[in-house]
Image (cartoon, rainbow, N blue to C red):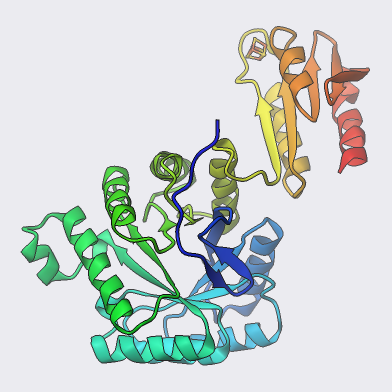
Length: 354
Ligand code: SF4
């Protein structure tokens, strides 16, 4: 079964095409401060290495613009970089001057029409994209009052107001986000916006929580929207390592067959039949495959009940018996090894196919 995606306008964030017929793009945001150069360099490299396709960075003050500019000049960004700006339009202007590929603003907190208009005119001149973002936690008080405190109605109204503002400036090179921390509110808001406009939508559940809770909430919320064909870029917001955000993003897209990127591990949940040490084995396989970008289905199974069946379906698989493990390659058993040699043998076979 394939998901039919809603057709949106295509925009280009640096070299990455978003919307239209392009695949859903995985985005993340750095957690390190721009001034902490060692940390941020490592984080940027790790993010890019694990497949982050759009990289957003918070730029809270003018000093941070200076650091960002230096990083851009170092050519560390091999994927497009988006500056996240709140409140101060001058920071947005300086970031555009510094050479970012996009900026994210909330037009409601940037100081009025003239300032938004100035940012847009500079973005147009430099041919970069803008993301207009509304968050449930920072809705304009007047809009909230008009909608009698109804958060979702206020978010939709604010978003559409900003869309009209950019259209009145004849600027169409933008995407939209409207994230709530409530999964149901997020779904409602995006569905409504998607019915009314055809600009690309960036999905996310904002302040989703720590890695476990946040990944589940994001998978449920974004999963439902993506299943309905809504969404052109995604970010899994987690209180944790940004690399986990990217991994979670790809896992969501892979599970809906919207992307085929990296390793998809099929492993059994374990039960009373499972061979001893199995969970540790799966953990080792996860570590072994974490850096692989090739599209690969890997099955790791704990006994002979479903093991051979699942292992056969994978590109490479292993199914444990009592004392031995069978290694499968594209549906064929290519060897039976002692349990103690299983990891080494599996690694050898894996290396041959990547
Ligand atoms: S594959 Fe075997 S060990 Fe794993 S959960 Fe199923 S029955 Fe249990």
